[in-house]
Length: 261
Ligand code: GDP
Image (cartoon, rainbow, N blue to C red):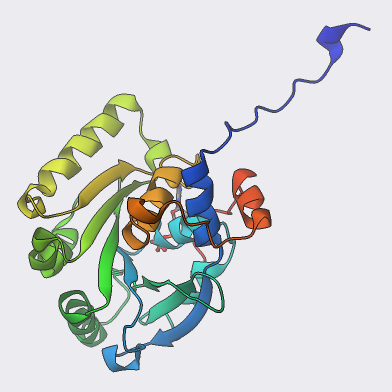
């Protein structure tokens, strides 16, 4: 038989490291808990919370779905009536939840009227400044545009808590597949410069290129988030996710890139 007639095998993604599998398995267990339009509608924070924030269209819903390897999880946040709400997801085993993910509404969406915008800005500012359970923020920045004045304002809301290390910060430079190598490096350097004001001896700030489409930075981001909730000291603990979830994570679930709006 002539080997050259064999169809080329599709390239398999490289196997995931154990920490990446554990982190993706942990995130895969995310399930919807509740939706809130005011802070007092959120559960009284007995679990640490990680908030996802970003300009409308920055790729936040797609990033959440990719990290959780679920097709629809964050698009629940885009259903009518919920777009201006905080949508809360819970992580960890059903009988021992260990963290919340909070999906905050995308800001800067031109079609939202001014009155609603102001109300919402207040809720967002209060959440970022006051929510006691808030342990980390994942800020989505479109890698092609970098920090806009609105992103800078959002950073200002959390800056005091980030500087002390009370709130950790991970910046995902989204849609990195749209940039070539040089432009990616420039985007990374520009983001690092924008973050200079919040980096201190006590802060925990990181920034990474991210693409849901090409799975760039997904494992790193997942590991960072799990590390926030389960610091390295207890990595010996087994991941709460079942083996099937980890296997699914390894199969690199193809999350559709739809706006969902
Ligand atoms: P959100 O408004 O921040 O939740 O943004 P979405 O997740 O809805 O994404 C907005 C648009 O960007 C959609 O058209 C997505 O398909 C697209 N998008 C999201 N992530 C990526 C990515 O990694 N690469 C590319 N090329 N497009 C993306």
